[in-house]
Image (cartoon, rainbow, N blue to C red):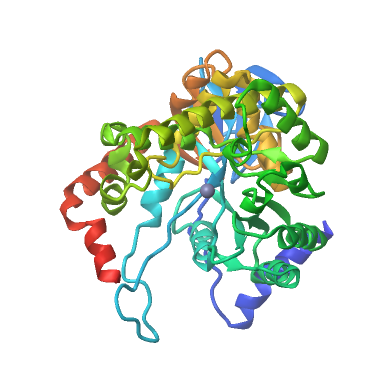
Length: 473
Ligand SMILES: [Zn+2]
């Protein structure tokens, strides 16, 4: 109760001081919404399934399960349908406005703008109600606020600040003291998580993980190249999660199951979780070979024409089409699967992530591809679903509000036409989605997607990635 009180003070005191109106367009249904006769896959800690149930949603919360149907409720028929918690993508990159290109002047902001709603529509349409951005900038706080205000309908966002070494990206730190200061600065700027990156030296990496723990921030990331040949050393206490399976695969020599098991044991011993992003390595392999699969991708039309242009005309993976690279990535794909299987067998928690934003990895839609790949690698459909719901919520520390279907949790829900426990691909058969209590039915989803595709296609000629990059020089 005390916490709620503090939150209310923080939320309301500042705007009132300035005499401004407190507004929110997030008009949750005041009339309760009821899903009748639905089968609930709760994904709670005991994996309860409740058949033929009634779920009552009031505002943005799950108010009751199997209580009486309130009078004046909007009723959705759930007969023969299945309800799962909203999906969580633990590895995404949300674009921000770009530019200015060419000579810069003070006061000059971005000149290339993108529509946040169009982008978030891809998550909404696919039942992804929470995302973890792993390269966050100040603009992402603004995006999150737009969703909070109700100006944009989209998933809740967790934000990680990147710290890299050398001449790398994000904040750079090449000494232990700079590493610690970078963590403290990121915390002061409001970031909730730290992402460590490839060019950090060993001492600075260790200092960052240690300082992040002291500051109460969890860490996720790449395994810096400096650990090549000494993989064991990367497993320092509180290194919370590895952001791609191939961060480990890069250290494989034989690419066999025994080696995968050894690595899974290192993760287990250190309580480091794994976010595999299998779909990304599958796409990298395809693009190294050819761009045909990207060109034929049915969801490409939902991607902004500038990004389409980048993927098709400046695709970095397609520049490496030599046979040695192809063999390398074939080994990566194989070993990534072994790793997922070994982690499952040994009890290393796996959380679902796609690395959406990477070329050909279409936001939202690829979440279902990722889950399909986990099942192909050896997870049960139930385990794959847990990786994208309860386990991800646990790692982020938001399990008290999302990640399972329980009374009083937020109404982040996906209604499916068929049982995903029978076939994981049934997560694609979406009848509708609740995003923070707001219902978006299939009809609305389809209209929004087709309008988006229409606009992207009509504006294709206006966006040329190469021309824009030339302007930048
Ligand atoms: Zn990434």
